[in-house]
Length: 248
Ligand code: NAP
Image (tube, rainbow, N blue to C red):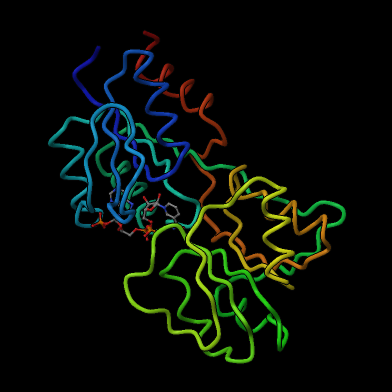
């Protein structure tokens, strides 16, 4: 095993899976987590937690630890850390790749309104709707101006401060299988879903259930990101690492 570590900017299931795959190939891996989740699934290998202190901090970390490859496997909506990664890789001349799960695309039967921001999503809700807000706790505040709407707010960790919504209920859980999501949407008499186009299989089940039930989805589009160095799956990252560092 080489002493020079591969640094994975993580916080996603793909990042954890990638760490396991690289370790299985006898690569030294450090996974970096932001430290936002209360009980994060800890990836295999070495793990560091917390911000670096901006792009400059990330550059200093890469230099200090003699990082061999930088992999940005953060969430598609985590734009700040991804910008910092591009900058840090360029300025330290560290080989760099971005693992980004493909976005979802509407299929026949889907009824999506695609919006560009949370603010647009707030405005797109019809009066008196019953809405599933499938968003992280830091994205709820803009919906407080819709006192005419009933929200069912689903999140994994409880909010740190009381939610500033007029009419809501809190559901502390993860997305279930399609059948569970169908029962949930029906029992709660939900008329709309608001979510971000995160991609991936785990949270797609609600989209499939909404299609089956004819429930409209207000889909917040991904931020537009540079497509250079971007690959869609773990296999492509492993190929990149093998090409860069040589096969082991
Ligand atoms: P962000 O806005 O892009 O990043 C904000 C700051 O958090 C960064 O500037 C950095 O601080 C720190 N940070 C973010 N990811 C980090 C990482 N993997 N390791 C060390 N520091 C990190 O990110 P965010 O949207 O708040 O997301 C935070 C983390 O949660 C990401 O790692 C992401 O993969 C994960 N996540 C995000 C979402 C989402 O919806 N955004 C969903 C699931 C998981 P410094 O500038 O001090 O380095």
